Image (cartoon, rainbow, N blue to C red; front, side, top):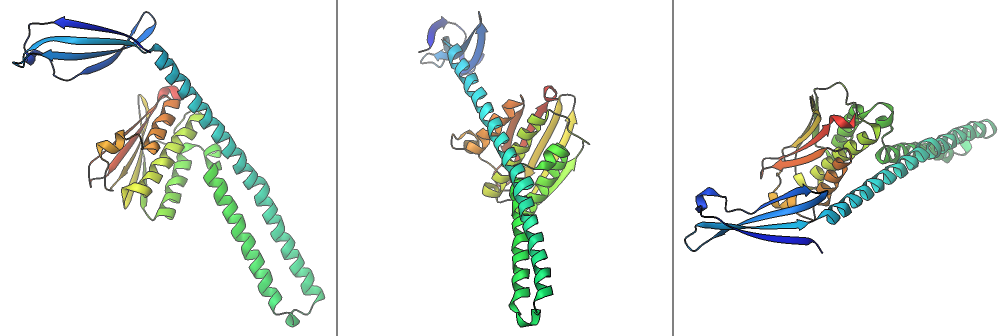
Length: 287
């Protein structure tokens, strides 16, 4: 239960002196957080006669929200650590095993060629070619899965090369042209925050494939005195206001939750049949 107080104020002013809209704001007083709602009161002549002020103590609610946000951040980090570990296992171990197996197959092929008359077994060369082809495909698939789990380029070279790879990978998979306009040479932020930025971009491109019906995408990287800005623009169907506010838009909510981890923001705008623009703000305090 919230501690709620209601105040009614009389006022002789007419409706022209105050907005008819409800105003809601938060206020900190004596170390507590209050939600303040102001509703104007009008008489039968549409004259403003007063206002109802409702002040609710939402301190515990805000504390619970912060705890949930901290927990969500913890889950995100744990998930990234698991993805990184699995990616390294696939790349460093499983990939090497497959490469070693291909070398053994090649060695076996050479030994058999020395002790057998290959003309007596015409199916053998085809079998070896088939096995090595399967192993090559398996190595490539392992590398691909490893990169999708955690692009090692993000750890080795940084965020901008990782964005370059993401744009190229997106174009190859979706067939949608993706241009990257870079007005910065590097984005210097905390490595754990660069992961969140990368995942937001990844989710935005996934949403474009699923929902936008776009043929072109542009990613713009900028820097100003407040930090960095990354904008993703598509020429798709656009986005309705209801879609942005829908509780079912988990992809949009997830991006905003990730941005809060580095005290940044994600803003989405668009018009029907005129495309969508997503803007990520990365403040200087993430350096």
